[in-house]
Length: 336
Ligand code: DAH
Image (tube, rainbow, N blue to C red; front, side, top):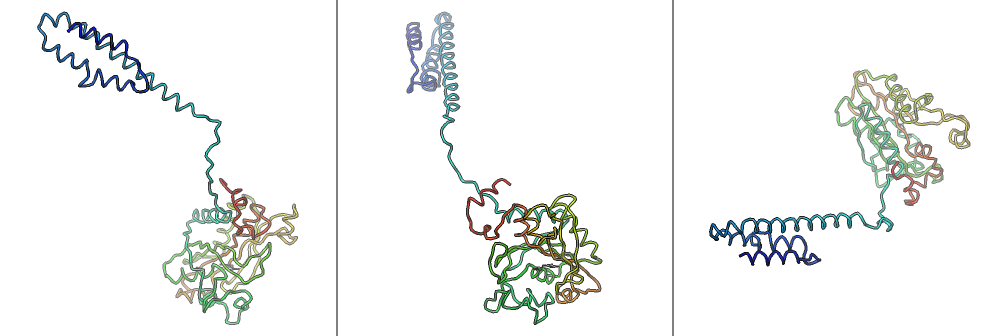
């Protein structure tokens, strides 16, 4: 037995670790359940008391040595693998992946919606292919109103491509859930010549608030708040009286853009005032078309174009640039 222990001791001392003989192989050979050291202890159990006295300490000594050799190697291997992990060549080119960017119109639409959410408005959408009734009739357009003319409207087999998001007002009021406090974004179409400043389709956000006792003061306060949030604290606002078939009284709202730059003068036609939206108190005839009693409920509405204010915000000179899908243009908006 003593010889056997000595022989194994020599063997352990001579054990050289390499790729095929790593700490784990060493542990399996010596320290595992079927390992050599474990077997020696089995044999030891069968020895006489005398033998045990002389062998015990030698055998324990061997076991400690084997364990520490194993431990040492294991730590070495772990340190090496950490090192290899950290030693990746940081000068190698990184894997190039393309990250997407939100379209500028989407960025602006999201911001607009966020402002109205903060005032308690919900969002809703309606169809782009509409019938004459929702796009015109229910909105109090007379039969012979020029907006129904072939010039402005795209007609498709008895339907129209909606010319404004005001049609969604009607769809929502018809549902009969009151009070209503909604913003309704979407694409609209007009049969117009395409140029840097106008397109045959563009984007609007419609607003609608219907309840008992809604007044023009509510409308103005809502829009003042919106302007301060979107265009910045201290932006000057003015309301001009206007006409829309579906509101009475009607107004257009301008913000002060200034006369400092060429761009300002061009956009504001030399006045310094930039037209932002149309608005007004929902016309009693419109309420009646949706089975709302104008004596009981009132409401305000507003509608604004998103494309123009996006062009203003990001200095985009040509409305067509939005839709060429040139990634070089879109990439500029990554992370905004
Ligand atoms: N629908 C109008 C347009 O496309 C904009 C508008 C004006 C919407 C007044 C409204 C409103 O809701 O009250 O020019």
